[in-house]
Length: 351
Image (cartoon, rainbow, N blue to C red):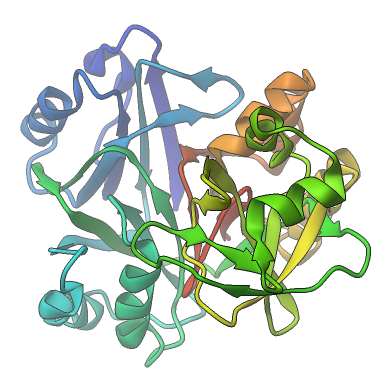
């Protein structure tokens, strides 16, 4: 298989797809103003080709902030794209769609991956999709787009998750997740007074969540929102840690970008040596996949902001380019198998 990436900083879809012939699967990464028209135009250009899309920035060696990016796989791919609707209420209502697509694509955990773009309610969505994927052990990477819209096969949806099952007919696939944070001290908190619908943490160890965060890090209310770049929360998940970004201060509570439940065990994280961690990720991928056809990644918006503030974003993309054909999306939350995480990078590597 091979991967195509085309883009237009001005938002010209024709410019972005220049040179793309006979795609077998397409991802559209557009802007909020042109999304609907790009979806319709893409379907006219490549009728019947499985496709998914969302509103978001794209990249290969450069970032496209407000234009359009197109990532396509061809020459050895079997794919099916579809959508689960009503994700805020009952995505499981549409689970038969993904079961049918799994049968049509075939494949196994060795050569097939699920890629998804979601409008929200991510944790519930991932639990739903995983009920189908886990039967074959198929991995998933994906993320949340902007503007509450996604597309699948030329149709725009709200309150939905667009997904694609992609089978590499000429080799393996494997997913990865990169965490550039580690535990700060030995702080451990039990969450309470949470609001699952608003992603609010009311209390930590029985004290107001805002007060706990401020007393440890000595920051003002205004500084909390930028301090989450250096010190997000983490939720322990076996040997793994799911990062939880702070969205805003809500009275004496903290609103987050990821759901926290009563009795969840949280820790406080701090930023590590992200340059060394990036190099280690690249080395690991190169060691496990000496031959790479494509790498598709999703970087969190907060990682993009952090790297940009440290004048590292461009260097980061150049370093990732060492993997070969690398392209991706800047998302508002990252999906890794059945986990919804923040401030992370997830990717899938095709042999």
